[in-house]
Length: 112
Image 1 (cartoon, rainbow, N blue to C red):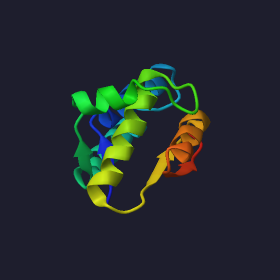
Image 2: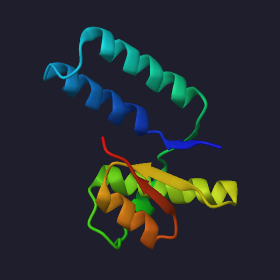
Image 3: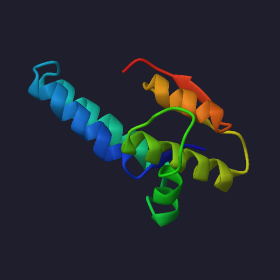
Image 4: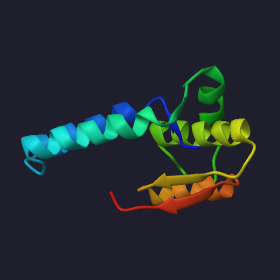
């Protein structure tokens, strides 16, 4: 199963729009990536960002993380609890991968 934090779509869309604005993606590439993003998230279980996630994201972590990465980590931990099986967290953030491993998740670091 695939899980994603509710903020994943927003973060990915902002990145794509920033890349397009910096002329690193053409109009056609932007459209293709937006379509692929929506298709990928159609098959994912979306983890809502409720108060429990926010509370979990607000605790001290093994690695200093910004708010959004802390929400992703808390969402991944919630997803692992929901699934009852070990999950892999895919990220481009080395800091998030370190914090995820320290929290007991399998983390895979990918280049952006």
